[in-house]
Image (tube, rainbow, N blue to C red):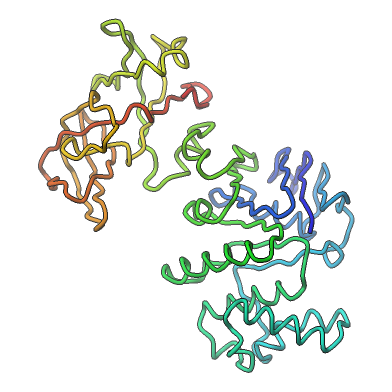
Length: 368
């Protein structure tokens, strides 16, 4: 069992800086997800922790020990890759036991650990099979089992579900979450899939171009993103953004979206953004806060109403995604499935302005 600390970690490949002053404290037993687009540095951060890449500057701690110069085999970590990397000529049992045999673990202890891990992952009946006789999900569970039998202080997972189909991804991510709860060990998980991040992580670290943007619980990232990048990355479909201006109107405040429409700002937000009246900002509203006016949830203020044209409707069964337009500005709403919205028609929508987001036009940092 061990906590992890990235302390002012930099990583450069020649002239290219991949990690820029990375600082993260990961308590013992936490499930931390590193998330971001391709090339953001998340896998490099994991590989540096594993010892597969040398850091350029800073320190990495596992527990109280600086591991900068510690070989990977001595870091007490286990890693699961996107590729299963199973030995095709070995049985499932031998694949899981191989690392323990190399470490000269007693045969009885190996058998005990392999069987316990196999039962935990529901692959006990597959121990005699070769990898070619397994499905993708079963192979991934064997790779997980190979890591579990080592009883490491830290589990590192680099996009382990990428090769699975959609249904199997959902099942396997639930298995990994249950596994974390059962083992109570530190997990660090890399993915570009924000749905995986939101459903699995106790905290999420969002990265962009080697820089940590925000590290917080999934709900805090969703409700209180620190900047436009985090706001747009977390949530599906992505947050709607508009170039806008804050103005006074009839003793209150409005968001003016370039003449396309104006919506009132709730009085509760005045203190936060009062200094930006008369200034250009970015206005953000999530699709799930854009409602068909006929089916506004209880408790939502209906004063921010707009009549919009409907460009595309995507029925999802439990909800409707509506691509709507007003004054040349297209955005997305997630409607109640009872909505009568149809492609080519129009619909009156209500924006839940209590959940609006305002960002500084210059640095894109969140004001609300």
